[in-house]
Image (cartoon, rainbow, N blue to C red; front, side, top):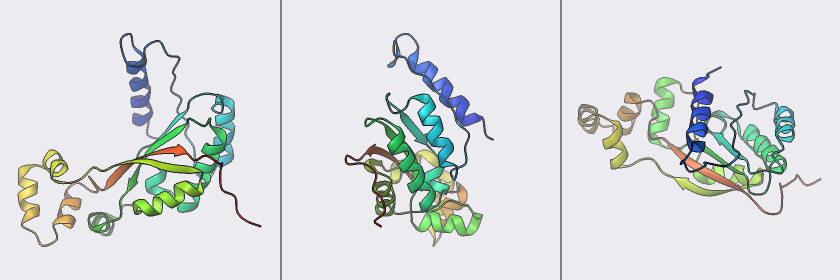
Amino acid sequence: VDQTGPSFGARAVEALCAPGAPLSGLDVYFEYLSYEWGETERLRLALEELGAGKELCAVSSEGGLFEYGSDEEIVENLKVLHTGTAGDAFVVGTVTREGEAVQASVRGNRIATRPRTIEAFQALAAAGGWAVEKVIERHGERFTTRVFTEIERTKSDGRAQRAASVSRSRRTAGSAVSVILTAELGGVPTASP
């Protein structure tokens, strides 16, 4: 299991709570839970143990569930998060964007992401009781200029399939969007009998 991400998260919370920092004086802590997406009962129990239904809870899935999970796994995890957290909870994460660059990368590198349109992801979020509050796009010329070297851009611009060239150069860099989810009022949708 990769410990780099959890270690970074813990250090970030520590820095944000330091004297003079934005969360200074607040009782904030970071807890990492290593868990398989199909084990939603384990997630439910962890949320209960943490008292997440009574406190502000922020959930992060960067480079995780929303990019690699199946539709069913996403919906089931979001349902558990919706019922196990307080009404002001929020979820942030990345979603692999459907598009030419991603498809080229998947074909060329056999990356296991599951690209989705924002509309498709919004439907999954709604089925789990959440609404996509904000989508933060990370692409365009500004992104390309900041991420790729001048040599990479020059090589890529001269090729017929620029998107495929760029994606091979940096895997799927820039192919994801960040999303912020907030709980929908009215609860988690249930299946009709």
